[in-house]
Amino acid sequence: MCGIVGYTGKSAAAPVVVEGLRRLEYRGYDSAGVAVHTGRGMEVVRALGKLGKLSEALAERPLAGNVGIGHTRWATHGRPSEENAHPHVVGKVAVVHNGIIENHRELAHELIAAGARFSSDTDTEVIAHLVQQALEDGARTLHEAVRRALGRVVGAYAIAVLGTDEPDVIVAARHGSPLVIGFGEGEMLCGSDISALLSHTRDMVFLEDGDVAELRPGGATITTVSGEPVSRATKRIEWSATMAERGGYKHFMLKEIHEQPDAIASTLRGRVDLEASDVHASEIGVTPEVARAIRRVYIVACGTSYHAGLVAKYWLESLAKLPTVIELASEVANRDAMFFEDDLVVAVSQSGETFDTLGAVKAAKRAGAKVLAVANVLESAIPRLADGTLYTRCGPEIGVASTKCFTAQLASLLLLAVYLGRRRGTLGEAIAGEVLKALVAVPGHMHELLGDADYVRSIATTLANAKDVLFLGRGHNYPIALEGALKLKEISYAHAEGYAAGEMKHGPIALIDAELPVVVIAPKDATYDKMVGNVAEVRARDGRVLALATKGDEAMHDLATHIIWLPEAPSWVLPLLTVVPLQLLAYYVAARKGHDVDQPRNLAKTVTVE
Ligand code: F6R
Image (cartoon, rainbow, N blue to C red; front, side, top):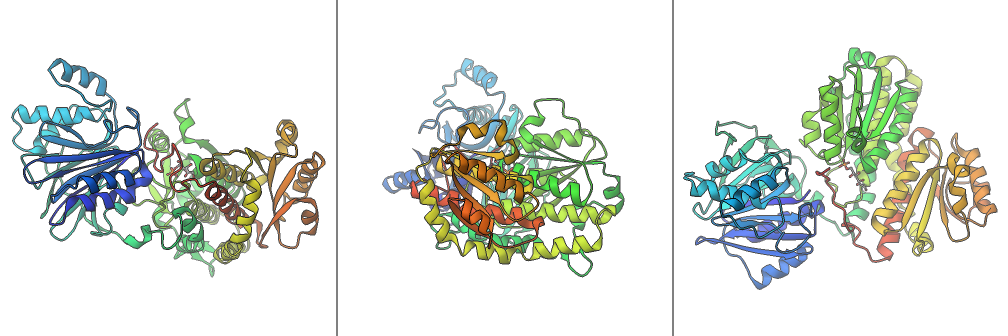
């Protein structure tokens, strides 16, 4: 995790760097720091806590200069503290780093034996020592010194380095952690993702693993670690800087919940062909021959993206008649997972950088399987490795709790099921047409649900003091129960559990009493009758039920303690709708408790560590 930013140009560097860090704060927020080249040397300001603390420290001790690097941290090695905050300065060198240096202990022993003194518990500090050592050993430029240092380290890194002797230079390098460089007018930037650079430029180069770039205000030269020049194409990015602003909402999460109708419309744009009852997705590189040759879909993902994958299993099996396995990506590494050449491995990841999902993709590639990414962040690691990518296209998601990307993942995966079903001949025109029509109507239904946000807020008061909450659903509503519980626990810190309602009698029913709120997902679909039975069982034990039910369902209205109405919609798309009130519920419970909704404790948005 962690976010890094670098700037060299004509503006004051510190405000530019802090502004970039603000956009990367979702990556980590336990401490932050900036180093600026003042023209005479380097000065550093670091602070424990969120970025606001760094801004306060900079107000007291402003840093003047046009070249700077900065970092916002999510601790891996060494607890959050000012000493462990980046940049780390050794001699004439300052370094910010995202990633993990696996051989840092060996390197530190060797450096200490040679007289080095360490002032932090981080793995990063070894990089600063190695660069300084290379300069002392005769490296002619900072770029050369960084290359020599990187030749020694094993692990994952994205780094930006400043050196006292080259006042307008930043050296930026990546291996396994993302880093993008931006070309402004007489200024150059680097950052962990494009949102950090968008207010300066849309022309960007995504560094490849092993690239080491020297940035000066007039441009960049890129080489490999051993010094061979490489050339990388510049891409023009279509996202705008305002897409990463809160736009009048109190939190990014609330804004992103409300952006869902647009996010879905954007995911569907140009892909749905209602006339032919088909899906256009040539970018995924799955030809009709390949589609027919697939024997199995194997979905790998983590967290919320895993829940999207769980829903997709229902669609892929019923529409494309493909046996579908879904596994938590973090578990793939814990056993000898078997992938085959005729598998289609679908890696679902908002960030496209999640360490475990990336690891599962590598394992699948080694076995010769075809890999399809469903991702939101352009040019991120998983799409780069995959054979094709279905981008969710919902703009930057800043709130740590994923919302709009979840529903956009669902829309993409339903498109995929239709696409495969049509090419495999398992899905006729009539049903495909129905599914696609239902998908196109989703943004309208979402507007309707979002129109009831105030009502959901009033219901949230009934959950605000609950210590435990149970979420129940069956069939395609079961993953939504899991997702509703995850949303609530990660931002409200209440214990919440999602359960398949059919499992109630096998254990959780013992929990039911007048204190435990039970959220039940019970739209009028094939699972409805059985869900009515579950609700009756809970009520018979004095349980409190908050039901999500289809408008006009009098029976559920009489049975439940509270009710949130769902619009009538074909069963295919219900998971895209039932989740919306659950997102709002989690948001309002957490906001009522006064929590920092966008940056919940202990979490970071992009989990690039194991
Ligand atoms: C929860 C959440 C996480 C992510 C998970 C995977 O709201 O956002 O559970 O879904 O960390 O992240 P990606 O999708 O980036 O691979």
